[in-house]
Length: 399
Image 1 (tube, helix red, strand yellow):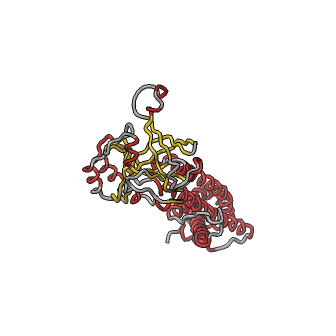
Image 2 (tube, one colour):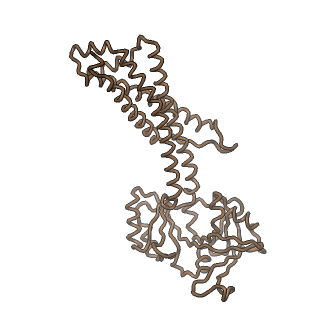
């Protein structure tokens, strides 16, 4: 057995003759356990909040979205749709038309996005599960489904044929709108049949209608659309995107869900890093006490170390004893802390002790990634702290 490892193992199992050193070592070890548990719990809580925040966009945003590289329109032929279905990882797709328009009803105005969708839209998203009241629209009709926020602002009811939702879209062309206001807009009537509720932002952003209705209102031909939204389970993202580029050419751009919510993802990643950094700094402060306890053990064991030195042990080997000793304490403390933190996270998942609201428990996620992050952090910092404290061993100390 390695000499340094054998001595370090003996020191781990034995107690010092000085009770004060034993107490200080115990406090430092408990601090490592608590620090590891706290870091794991905090990362698990943030993972839960991250998953909760992204659940709204995951319910709405596609896995991939084909958009025009320039302008607002892309073309999609029947042949291209058939090619799309042959890509590995493809599940479903939906053609959509989006445009910012003016809505008018009950003497109230609201600017929002009109989103025309085809009959396959329900196969891509669980949109019907988000219907707050009423029903989802039927194809080839003038029906509409509005967001809860829009319905509230415009005092909209559903199935009210006497008060349709008027839609105004500027006609393409040149010249001043003031010269001919009435002829400057395409106008259509939509009849709300349902109200959806996803989140506050989306509920005030979109009005859904049939794809053909939106194309007619915007003067688009049948093969002209704003985007293609794709549901996929592709394992290789780069290969899937490359296949889409081969079908539609370089006139389109393919965006992933993360790219569609780039600001949200960047904000969540930044918050996660800052939170991790803060708790890592706290743990570094705990390690100051740990470094002190290891140094005190070195001083306490000085006579034994002198004996080892005089019988031929090298200074490097003696330093290695306390490097292994300190790192081992951090590894054991990190594992115990993760187990303790895991119990807390599991208890919250199962028993929901802490609630945000009466019906919403504080979200937590038990993640292998968080276990690895905590363990790597604890072991790395513990190794550095042990290395610093082990360097106090010198010939001057032993002589």
